[in-house]
Image 1 (cartoon, helix red, strand yellow):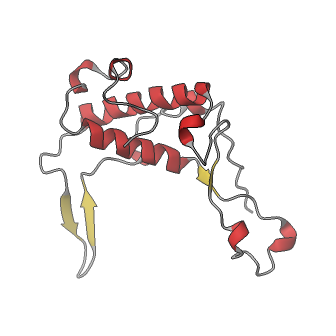
Image 2: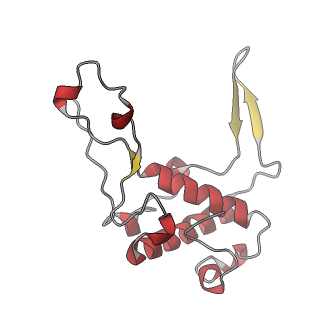
Length: 150
């Protein structure tokens, strides 16, 4: 069940496009969109340079955290109000887009590629398939560390 978007709330449903408010897949898509959204902002803490000599697998260094300002990892319902509102509106936008553009009648399609490889297509798209600009409301909450490489 989604934490930041309640499909039984009239205020939350009002944020959705009118054509998708009573869609049969609404609860499933909202749950998937919220999971993908939170997963997008997960990151391991930066490992200090003196720990990089073979000690990367220490359990304290392998913790994955959600890198959003005001996000409460222990109890997400207690996250900051501005963050919850930004997540709620972002989930509504993406859910509306997914349900309006989702036209796979069988929900899942399989394509065999080679002797043993199967690719499943047609499920709810991940953030890579969402429209450009989907994270605009969350840019001020983004606390991910920049990844640099040479």
